[in-house]
Length: 539
Ligand SMILES: *[C@@H]1O[C@H](CO)[C@@H](O)[C@H](O)[C@H]1NC(C)=O
Ligand SMILES: *[C@@H]1O[C@H](CO)[C@@H](O)[C@H](O)[C@H]1NC(C)=O
Ligand SMILES: *[C@@H]1O[C@H](CO)[C@@H](O)[C@H](O)[C@H]1NC(C)=O
Ligand SMILES: *[C@@H]1O[C@H](CO)[C@@H](O)[C@H](O)[C@H]1NC(C)=O
Ligand SMILES: *[C@@H]1O[C@H](CO)[C@@H](O)[C@H](O)[C@H]1NC(C)=O
Ligand SMILES: *[C@@H]1O[C@H](CO)[C@@H](O)[C@H](O)[C@H]1NC(C)=O
Ligand SMILES: *[C@@H]1O[C@H](CO)[C@@H](O)[C@H](O)[C@H]1NC(C)=O
Ligand SMILES: *[C@@H]1O[C@H](CO)[C@@H](O)[C@H](O)[C@H]1NC(C)=O
Image (tube, rainbow, N blue to C red):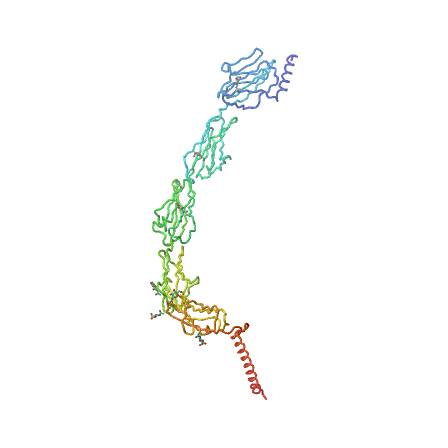
């Protein structure tokens, strides 16, 4: 082995030794978007070389791309005008790459000594992501019945698909919801689709290493329901007033909205729509007795029908125009009879109650009610029957009152005169006559048996004279009963100063009598005890 050969070998060993772990190309694959410029970098640092050669291999055969050497560049014809190499680092640049540019690019670095270093890198020309579109196998779906298959298709290379529901990733459970990816599409399958599956928009995302494209939000109507039909009010009043504003409303969650039908005691009514008015019920002649109403909700798309539970009520006519009629003629206590009758112009009366002057009217031998309480007979009438009679007619929806003012003529009852029995001359005197009577009694006064002109209940003497001493007779007469009662009163007019201011004659007489009675009693008691004591003694 000569010295030169040894040196060369040493250099080569050194070259290999130095560069054995040293890559000259980065790791691939290198991705570039179609139409963009491709630069294949090297890891060479200030290389010394005789030639750098770039070749291309698309899997078939290798073709030359470009060579740089001391004599300059050599470009293969197909690459003319679109290839460049950086003499300082060997970077290869290819402008406006085409799909056919995908493949392996190899670099050969040949040193002045003839040593060659070769490496290759895969380059992928990526088609941009575009036309990301979701299509459905069905234009609309029925919940639980249909299987919905959404297909997302896109253009581009090395695509990966993912699905979003709203903003969150859509996760397949592998059973009811599954996702299957292919090269240029992905299918999302909902077996027995649920309404919630497609709530919020579904978006398909197609991605490759360089780009991400989203589809337009996709939504599909999943028809569902009705789940449950409910009538409101669920508990209507037991009785409703005929003609009042009352509605039954049927509701059900449903897509599309349900249609409603109404049933009366299980029989379909001639009514549809969510609202059944009381007016309609009455128009159909229903509801007069407690009866059940139900509704059904129907979904035309899902063909499902659900029935509500029933509500029950009865329609009752209000009581209108209550009247209480009583006798119209003149009534006389002890002689007349009254028959009071309570009636309503319309409506069904359930209960009748009677009051007189606000208190319950109680039956008695004189006050006899009809069995249905619609009338009361009072026989004979008495003065106590004067007053206001009221009857109240009640049913579950209304109550109505009427009243009658009863006037029973009676009296006059025995008249009484109150006033002084003895006065002094010049005293003012008022004698008052009273006698209970309906109508009020007319009064006349007689003095010593002679009729006077006084016709008022009071007999007034402004200044008493001696001649006023005598007997005053008041006569009360009732113009209706034609009865008369009278009362007499004696009054004496005395000399001025003769009457004790403190005690009246009557009072003095009273005191005297009281003393005499007490004295008599005391004497009597003493006499009695005296007689008794010896008798009761055992001796
Ligand atoms: C690609 O390279 C050509 C030629 O060097 C240049 O004119 C063009 O601007 C480059 N395009 C891009 C997108 O860098
Ligand atoms: C999706 O939903 C939006 C709003 O909720 C609506 O405007 C649009 O028409 C729907 N698209 C389809 C295909 O149903
Ligand atoms: C009942 O329904 C009718 C017609 O739908 C409406 O005019 C009325 O106001 C409703 N009445 C009540 C009490 O809701
Ligand atoms: C949905 O499925 C049920 C039960 O299989 C069936 O009775 C019903 O008719 C189906 N509905 C539609 C709209 O096909
Ligand atoms: C009471 O009735 C009787 C018989 O009807 C009649 O004769 C009498 O006059 C009446 N009395 C009064 C005060 O009206
Ligand atoms: C009261 O009068 C009504 C109607 O005139 C009649 O039906 C009823 O029997 C009478 N009642 C009595 C207790 O006489
Ligand atoms: C009773 O008195 C009234 C007025 O107080 C009078 O109008 C009527 O005529 C009198 N009747 C008799 C019968 O005097
Ligand atoms: C009225 O009668 C009384 C007693 O009978 C008699 O004392 C008096 O003088 C009479 N008065 C007149 C005015 O007649």
